Length: 191
Image (cartoon, rainbow, N blue to C red; front, side, top):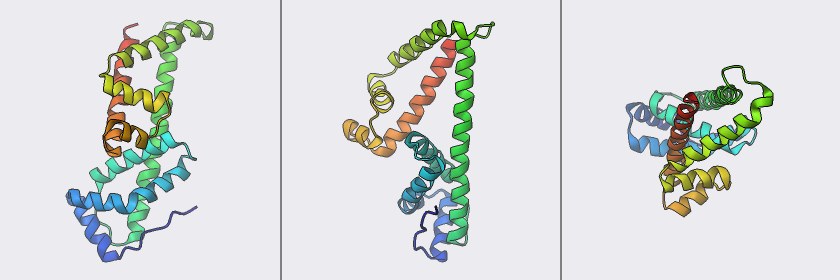
C-alpha cells in the first residue's frame, strides 16, 4: 500500500528541503504539516498497526529528519528518502527493543548461572525494581508514564490532561523511558 504524496511542486520541495538542511524552524514546521500524517500512515503499515511502535518510530524519524535533512530536487526523491529514514527508524527501534529485552532476561535469569526455575524470584525482583524506579520519578512524570503504559491513554488524552502539547508529551515520554531504563539497569547491575 502506498501513501499518497502531497501536491507540491519540485521548486517548492527544493526550497523546503534547502531550508530544512539549514535548520530553519519554520521549514521544519512546514515539513511537519505536510508530511506528519503521511509518515504516520506509512509507519502504520511498516509497524503492522502497533501504535506504540508507530509513535516511537515516528518520533525518531522526525528527529532524524531534523538532524540529517538535505536538499532534494523532486517530491519523489524526497518522499523516497523519508520512507527509508522512517523504515530504518522502525527497524532500529525493533532491534533496540529486542536487545533491551534480552538484557532484562539475562539479568532476570541471573548472570551467575540462574535457571528458568529461578525466574519466579527474578521476576519479582524485576517488578520491584520497576516499581521503585517509577516511585523515584517526579509525580507528574510518573502520571505520564502510568497513563500511557498502564492505563493505555493516548498522547492526545495525556496532552489534554496535562495541558502540554502532543509533541511535548511525546518528547517527555521518550526522555522518561530513557531515564527509567537507565535507573533500572543501574539497579540490576547492583544486584
